[in-house]
Length: 432
Image (cartoon, rainbow, N blue to C red):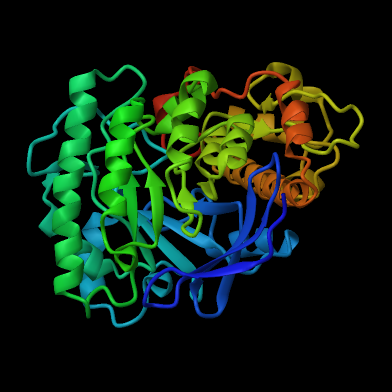
């Protein structure tokens, strides 16, 4: 089934979502306009940051990488837990948040938690959620959260929620996450409505929580949909995992029925955000169900754990089936003077070899993770470009079949021992 392009007004600050195509078996294509002159194609890959920066890469290197992909605009995913210490200075900053972090003209999304780092469980209270920063755990009220959002002034931000659930969470914990999220969101909506000038250029995403309970998820959706449609511009799914490597180990048979249940209850005119390091096959399944926006935390976690992404997403490539990862710690690489991936055009593959990357690992050089991150981002951006092409042709199932034939995409934590003298100079010893 194909549909004619339909334009939906998402909120009063001219954020718009255009559905270009809904395919019979392959999800949906769209255009997301967050700023008046910035249009982003969906399914969209947000650029995950740590402390406002693309991990391992300078702004200049990242922009060079984007030019290779013929992309100019992107969505920066920022996290409050890694940037909270900047709130006071941002409150006095007269320009935009994207200017502050060194990416002028781009769009920004502010999350509470870092999808790259495992979020500790516990520490929840009726009126606060824990925020884990470099200084330790801090208790965050909804009022304080909205004050910080007003200081950051992102283009998009998520509403505050209790997302401390995972596949093994008890029914009691799941219900508490929903009840507390509803309470937090009532305060967020009230703050947003009462201080319209502070939030005039910001669009809120309504968080959907409820763990792996269809009943709890429905309750969360119903609370969001009772609000005026202009009070939020889209949905963000939370509470499926505890971030970090946990997202790469989710079981599709557990997750997908819950997501499908939720998607059937959401209106089509608002985008659906899915933060976290979902594996490529699971990402395709989520897109098939109607998810629109993902992030690059999977590419980062692979690089931080010594892995180059080498899975094949080109159905015409020979061989069609190949290894999902290349682990640069493997000793057999020390005499392999070939690129990380033979058909890759990234700088790391054009100018360096597997043996050199292995040498950088052995000598704890910072250039090692830089080159791996360049390659992984290049590879993952190319993957999403192919996803959009396959969606247009209604051939997503064929791409999914190609990916699933190549093995496991779960990222296991690095357990290799690194001398303490080298810690912080290159590859990390624990990226879980």
